[in-house]
Amino acid sequence: GAVVSQHPSRVICKSGTSVKIECRSLDFQATTMFWYRQFPKQSLMLMATSNEGSKATYEQGVEKDKFLINHASLTLSTLTVTSAHPEDSSFYICSARSVSGQGTDTQYFGPGTRLTVL
Amino acid sequence: KNEVEQSPQNLTAQEGEFITINCSYSVGISALHWLQQHPGGGIVSLFMLSSGKKKHGRLIATINIQEKHSSLHITASHPRDSAVYICADTHSGGSNYKLTFGKGTLLTVNP
Image 1 (cartoon, rainbow over the protein chains, first blue to last red):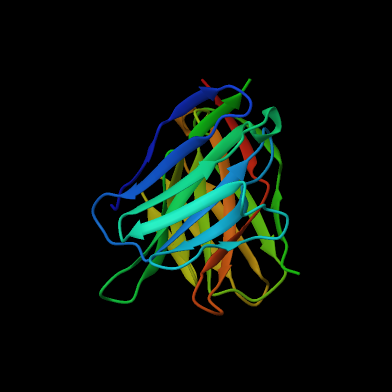
Image 2 (cartoon, rainbow over the protein chains, first blue to last red):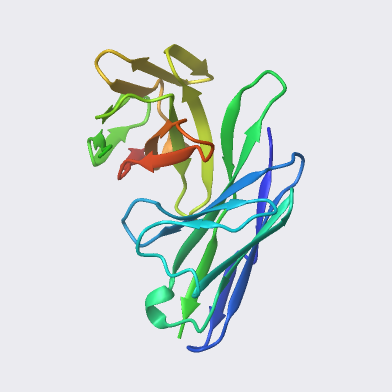
């Protein structure tokens, strides 16, 4: 099946620094990628929808200036957490939308990135 | 507002037991997903279905569109099936294909 990778898988940073997380679709082109955040024992929450070549669409309550999203190519989207704070510590997961030649529309999830802000 | 409810929240079973996890949604959908999340956090997509039934190995997913209900069944459960199982629905209105997630069911299969 289709593969989506994320890098890094884990990152620990100091408060006030910025962290970039990459999401790549390895064997298909994804015009749409999604960024989710998951706090312990909670469900995934959609942060933003990333469309190749255009600005991301952020969900209500997500600060677009704090969580910068860039989808510069059909296989790569990046999420940058700027001026990270301990409350940004979470599990960040991306997914990439794939539409097959037969019209099957599905999402493939990355393995996630565990961010810890000290 | 669309809501996705799963039951049970937690489920403990003995190896070999037949397991059922239920999912209900409130608004008509275009597709329903069943996902598996292991302790390390990575998510695997198990099924996407919009009608009927799908089977993959020991896993079976069914959906009843009229009743807005889906079930995930695991036959001959094994300790390696221990994970969080999440259902999510999607509405294809517009072009963004967003998922709404349930809170997940934590399954523990004991040897």
